[in-house]
Image (cartoon, rainbow over all chains, first blue to last red; front, side, top):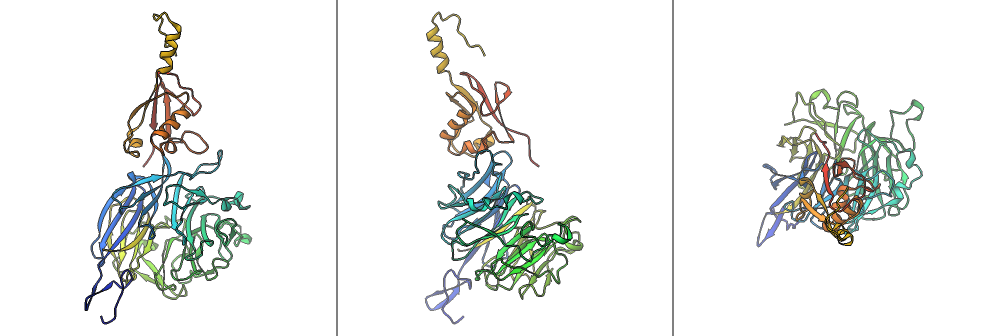
Length: 383
Length: 108
C-alpha cells in the first residue's frame, strides 16, 4: 500500500506515522423483525457476527436506520395494542426512547397504525412513511413529527387501494442533495414524486404494469403495486423498482420506467438494492410468482445480480440453501454495506440473515432463528 | 353508585369527602414498561375516562397516545373498564371508582 489513504472512507486504511495500516471498522446490521429490533455486529472482516437484542420491547419493527448525521438508530414500528411509534437510541441500542407525537391525521380519519419506513433527508430532517399511507417529517431527531400534507391532499387519493399488507408508504427516497425532491412508493397506489418539498406531487408510473387490471388498462397513471424503490448511490435520478408486476429502471427520476425483467426467473419479488459505488450493479430476489407461496423459485435460494443496469442477470447461489427453501424476502429486507468489496445482506421470512462479503459471489448464514424479518439495513463505523 | 355516609349528620361535610375521593387507575405492566418511573396503580381526581387519559399523559408524557388514538377513541386492542363495565372516552368517573386499563388478547 503506497498511497496515503483516508479515515472514514470505503478503503478501510489509515495512515499512521510512516506506515499505512488497516483502519478498524465495525459493521452494524440493523434487523427489524415482527418481534423487535436486533443488531448483528462484526469487525471489518465481516467473518463473525455477534447478535444482540431484541430491542424496542419486542414491538413489530418494520424498518430501522442509523442516521449518519446524528449517529442515532431510529426504529419504526407499530404495536397492535399501543399504535405507531418511532424508537430512538443514541447509544447504538443500549437505551431507547419512543415517540409518536405528531404522527396523527385529523380527527375522524383512520388513525396511523404503524410506521413502515424511515429515511434521512439531505437537510438533516428525518422522514417517516406510515400506514395508512402518508408522509411525516421530523426536524428534532424523531421526538416530534409534522404531517407532509401535500401527498394525502393529492386529488387521486380516493383512488388509492391497499395492497395485501395494507395501504402502506414503504419506499422513501429523498434526493441526495436537494431537500425539495423526494420519491415515495405506496402499495398499491404507485410511485409519486415531489420537486417542491412535498407541497405538490405527481404520479410517476409511466411504463410500469398493473397485470391485475383489465387487459386494456394495464398501464394506468397510478394504481401500480410498487414493492420497493431505491436510488442508485452517487446518482440523483437513477431509480430501480421491484414491482408486483416486473422489475424496472428509470433514468429520469421516475418520469418513465423501462422493464429489466428479461433473464430473471419471475417478474415478482420484493426487495431491491444497489451497489454503493457502481450504479449499474443491482441486486434482486425474485420469488416464484404471487400465487404459489411466494417462495424461492424451485425452492432454491438465489440473489440475482446485474452489472449492467438490468440488461443481463446472474444468479448468485454459492453458500445459499439449494433445496427446500420455502421462504421469501420482504421488501425492506436486503441491503448493501459501504465496504470494499461491498457486502450484501438479506433477511428471510423464516428468520435467517445471509451475508456476502464479496459483492454477492458467495454467501454465509450469519444469523438464524429470529422472528420474521421485515428489514435489513447496514452501517459502517470506525471502531 | 351510592357512597352516602348516612351517619355523618352533615350533608356539606359528606359532599366534601366525596369530592376529595380520587379515582384509582390500574395500568398493565406492558404499558408501564414503556414509561420508566410509571406506576401500576395511580390515584387522580378526574371526571371522565378522557380526562383520566389526559392526566396519565401529563404524568408520563406519551402514555396518552398509547391508550387513545387520534379519531379520538380508545385504541382498538385496548380496553378500559370502569367498575366492571367496558368504557369509552366519554364514560363519567365518580369519586372512588376503580378503572382498569387492559390490553386485549391479540398477537401471534
